[in-house]
Image (cartoon, rainbow, N blue to C red; front, side):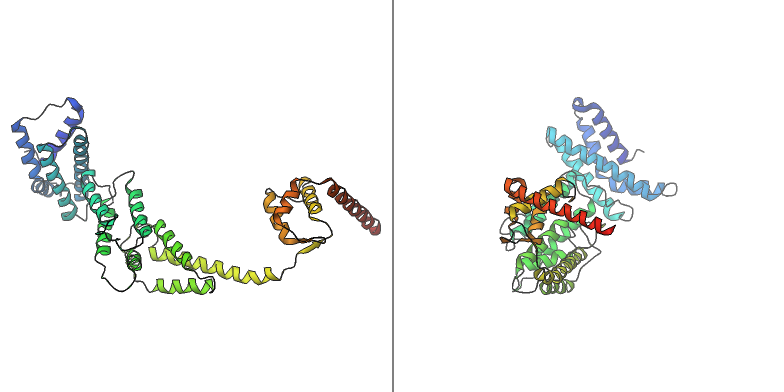
Length: 370
């Protein structure tokens, strides 16, 4: 006796081969198809038990999952083109229920990381958008708009090219439920949502960037940045996380990503604090030249290859901080950059005199060495 899945597969291949020329089914054929699709679970169990002694059960489940996935996606493409019929609706309902049966009753063999059929994902996506999107009844109704946009954009990125996996869909549904079920309290609703996302391991780079942006915006310039970042790190360490759950299982946990980012900020701030006293005490080297003359001197050094610099603006900026003019004192980086390109004839003559003196001094050194 032919099993139900074979019947459904044969219908799929027949429909694909016929294309738009596929004739409509007779009433008797429709009843046969509906009867077959409605008994998929029972027939699959019987066929799986019969074949278990010959082939691996995981192979049977994998092949069946792929077949049902292809059938559901084909039904979706036909609906988009020709609309929904009574027969398609009944078959879709039966196949969807059978896919869920495979997923739950044969979970150990089911490939949860495979993409979902479009027909199964679309109602879930609509449910998620209704929960996360703008509106008074959404989980982010009283929270920061930027946080809601972060989650919505992440969801859009994940589903823009293909449907997510079954495991990814389960994660989003679980996370949305946790955000909705937060106990109301006197604290900031945005912070409650943030802690929920960290706890349930929303390990998305966009979310980490959002949080770092909040930390940076909250820094008080009158207080030590190291102490403020350290305080943020201590608060983060108190948050309990669930590493067994993850938006991206292959990536570090959300808490680890945040800890590493904050630790890097602390290291950077400590370096800057250690370097600032030295920079403040450093005195620029005084040159016996005016700013136009220093511009000529730097230009000649670069053009002759004595100074290797690809970025003239950066060179003049660093030079302005390292040198001072005997005539004008502190050097403006902008003025030095202008004189670097607009060489003044009088300045060229004076620098030439300095270079001649430099050449004569070198000759004197050489003669003294003989």
